[in-house]
Image (tube, rainbow, N blue to C red; front, side, top):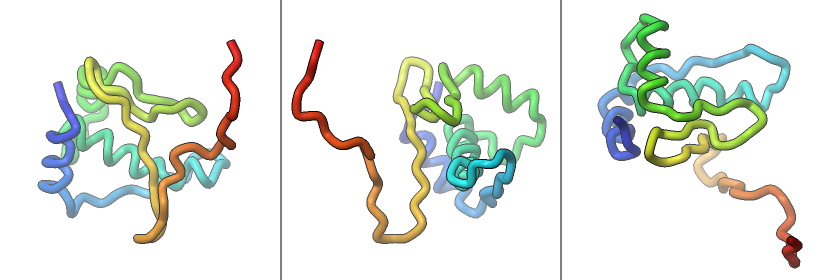
Length: 109
């Protein structure tokens, strides 16, 4: 079982860990955040230094109920816990766009 506080502690203990650049696929926007997603996923599972892919996959299945896909949010869901949407910002003063759709003024059944 993992939670957000444990992930923050894991990140602070492993802040020198290198975030890999992923270049698979033809969507540059998705590829830009892919390495960060793997880093955050490893933070929740606390497996930064584990090189065994099978062990990583087993650990991810223990912790996450959903590991996301490129087209549907969220990026991760903890079992019996939070849903996590990972966003990469380029600059220090960048704002996170929480919803890029124009707000609706009416709701219909």
